[in-house]
Amino acid sequence: MSTRKPLFGLLGLIVVLVVVFGTLSPAFFDERLVLFPLLRDIAIYTVVGLAQMVVLSIGHMNLAVGRMAAFSAMFMGLSYDRLHLPLYAGLCIGLLAGAAIGAFTGWIIARTGVNSFVVTLAMDFALLGLIPVVYTALTANAAFTVKPDGMRELRQYSLGDVCLGNVCGSPAVPQMMLLAVAPMLALGYLYHGTRPGRELLLTGSNPLAAELSGIPTRRRVVTAHLLSGLLAGLAGFMLAVATGSFRATIGEEFLLPSFLGAILGGTAMAGGVVSVIGTFLGTSLTLVIRRGLELVGIGLEYLNVYLGVILLLALSADRFLQRRGVKS
Amino acid sequence: MLIAICVAGYLSLVVASGGAFASGNAVQTFFQFLPVPVLIGLAQMIALSVGQLNLAVGALGGFLACAMGVLMADLGVPAPAAIVIGLALGAAVGALTGALVVFTRINGFIVTLATMTILIGAQYRLVGTRTVSDYSPGLKEFGQASVLNIPLVFLLALGVAALVAMFFRAAAPGRRMLASGSNPLAATLSGVSNDRSVILAHTLSGLVVAITAVVTVAVSPGVNRSIGGDWLLPSFAAPIIGGAVLTGGTAVVLGTVLAAFIVRLVDSARAEFSLQPSWVNFVVGAVVLGTVVLTRARETRRSGGSS
Image 1 (tube, rainbow over the protein chains, first blue to last red):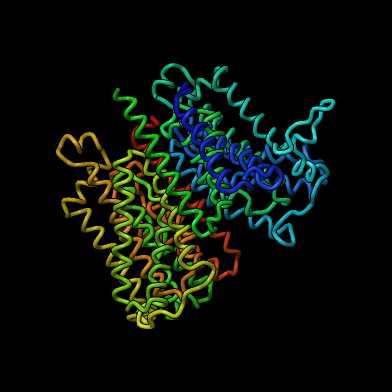
Image 2: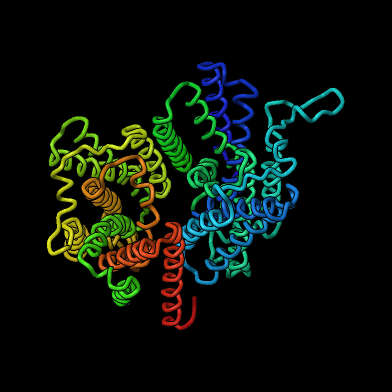
């Protein structure tokens, strides 16, 4: 397992950037207007990154990560709108739907041996077509606007609302962060401390050797995709809570961040190497850059350009350092 | 088999529409919007031939279309010059992408993901929320012109397809690209530079995207920031249905063209029966999945059941 130096590099880079942006624009440290939404976004996109990380761990990709989130969110919206379920019961139904679509995708891949890129791409197509059809059939304006009890609180409450006696948490940290911390802990335990987790990594680093040493590789492929669908569903829920409605467009923007967070954090595209903390830090880095550029006054039109350039530079620098490290 | 599907699909559409689909006008509309899926499929196929992916197909096409539109409408550049600049720009961006992949050794998937972000930003920067439409009437005439109800732009796309086919069949660089794609180690040992193949593949891919952008500018009433947004998935669908292998080493020009034809058929059928646009995506997704699974099943049977 790689808990290598890139993590310190990432952390250092984030600290430097926060200081730079903070100096350029003191508003960066505004708890309610900047830090709270920033941390909420970091929580959401960390889960998105984790959804990609679990399939990268076996050397696969999930191009349908955003659409799986939308699929899952559709079931949540349905269960609130039609069945009037409470917040967390609907969440469970949605997560089940996400896990099911993920497992189905994994099953197709394991069963046919077709490249995961193609299968998830086709799945993305299919869901992209299916979801709007359902929404237009069941809702008036293509969104479930029903707000179950507790949704508003989950969106707005921070650790500042949690008190032990006189000591309260920071009002800058949203409670939604807990929804990201829980899967991080669970995945950390899965990969470090359990047999299935080690088997996932072995399947990723060398499928043939894994198969020959008696690891049920096909089942692990299904496991990884199931987890990916589940996490995508959770991210969809978090985004829906943050934006206030369950819509067909949820997850449209997930694809790029899902790869960036995981890859910047040191997860290998070829499989076999994952880093849960790295995914969190990689996601934080991209969002700090994005938010900082916005505050410093870079217009929306330039934002994507700068973001792309900075990320290419970061990746090249990382690659360069690694290669030097190998040589010496 | 693909040809049979094309013919059967087209005939059933003619029958289902009560013959209206066989009229000259309908045929012309059908072929008018066929070049774009064909060309983006070819652009992706060229990248796939060396085992690379090009996620920036749509972003580059949209950026180039907008760039050419702005050059002609705002800066008064004559149409031929704007087209030449567009083509050169496309090839240059492709070459740069290839160079980045080769020199940084970052996965091409990630590099094109990043260039995609940059290009989408650049496209938005160029046109913002407006639609650029008052450019060269000559170019628009070319977009509408046709011989015997077959639009010129479609003939152009076929010409590009023929050139690409010849390139892979007869030209030495094309053969070298296929060698690099199918077995990089063997290619290196027989004196082929894989790096050069990758750069060449991205350059050609960028060039074909630029041609697509020219066609788009010619055919559409105006260009805005939504152009290219829905190209990515069809660009993969055409070569994959057509039989290209993701790991490289194959060039299936005819398959890509026919598959693009099928995708276009699905789209026309949708318009004919006034269904929601999203059904197209659903059907195409199902077709892609069905094709790969069927191909795989046939291969497995042929190789004696071992997967």
